[in-house]
Length: 71
Picture 1 (cartoon, rainbow, N blue to C red):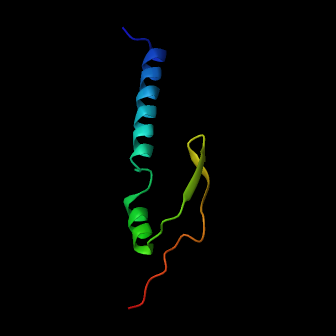
Picture 2 (picture 1 turned 180 degrees about the vertical axis):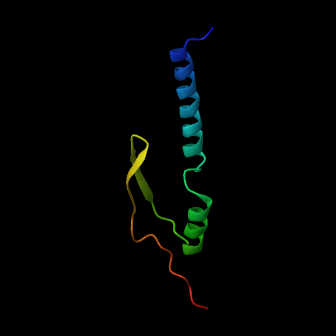
Picture 3 (picture 1 turned 135 degrees about the vertical axis):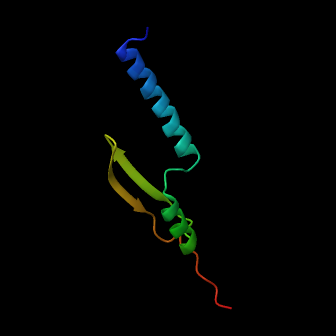
């Protein structure tokens, strides 16, 4: 029989593996945000600072928007 603390540790490890998988596959952003970034043709860098499971700060680096070419 697995003790509660061992079960919690296993659950934490499983959650962390899932977290790493999502970060690697860029699933951190919502699909709505991804569509917005694509429509803006944004190719810059987004940053998110998380502490204790809460977003403390987010931002982006300016100057990374592509100019739309006029035909």
